[in-house]
Image 1 (cartoon, rainbow, N blue to C red):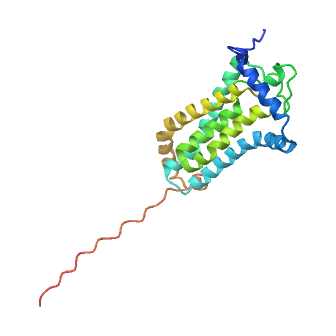
Image 2 (cartoon, helix red, strand yellow):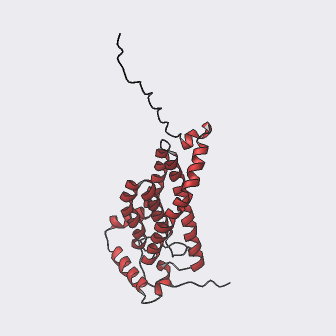
Image 3 (cartoon, helix red, strand yellow):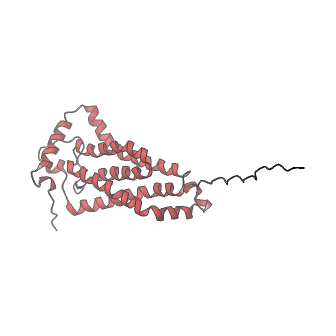
Amino acid sequence: MTTTLVPLAKAGPGYGVGVYRDITEWAVGTPDWLQTLGELFTEGGILLFVGVMIFQWWRARKGDDRAMAYALIAPLAVVVVYALSEGIKVWLHEERPCRDIPGVRAIAECPATGDYSFPSNHSVIAASAVATLLISWRLIGVLLLPVAVLAALSRVYVGVHYLHDVAAGMLLGLLLAPLVLLALRAPGTHLVTAMRRKPSLALVLGTSPVLAPPAPRQAPYSATRS
C-alpha cells in the first residue's frame, strides 16, 4: 500500500517553505549557546508544564473538591487533545521539512521517518496545558502563556516543524482542552467528593476543607429589676 504525503506547506503561494527557510537559515547563524538553549527548551518547556501540573495536584490536596477535579482532569484533557493531534498526523502524513526540503540545515536532528509534521504535538501539549491552567489556576496560566508560545516556536527554530504546524497545534490545544476540562468539571467534582470520603485515598486526593461551625449566638443581655 502506497502512502501519499500531503504537501500542506506547498499549497497556495508556498509560504510554508519560504518562511521555514528564512527561520532556519537565521537560526543556524545564531550563537552556539542560543542554539543549545533552543534544543534544551524545545523539550524542557514540555517538562515544565508537566511539573506545574504535578504541583497543581499537590496544591489541590488542600483545596476544595472542584480544585482537585481540575487538577486531575487537566492532564486528561491534554492527553485527549494530544491523541487527536496524533490521529491527524497519521491521517495527513505531512513530511517533516528537515527531510522534505533539499539543502536545508536544521539545528536539531530530524525525527525518524514516519514521524510526521502536521500538527506539532509539542505545540498541542504546551497549548493544552496552558489553556487548562487559564481556567483552573489563572495567574499561573497567564504567566506561562508566553512560555507555551516560545515552546511552540522553538520547534521551528530548531528546524523540525513548519510554522503552520505549530500554529495548528496551538489552535487545537487552546480551543479543545478547555472544552474537555469544562465538560468533565461537574462529574469530576462529584467523583472527587465521593472518593474523598474514603480514608485510604486521603494521601492522593486530600480532604475537603472543613469549615468551623458558627459560634452559637448568645442571647442579648437584659437587666432585670429586683
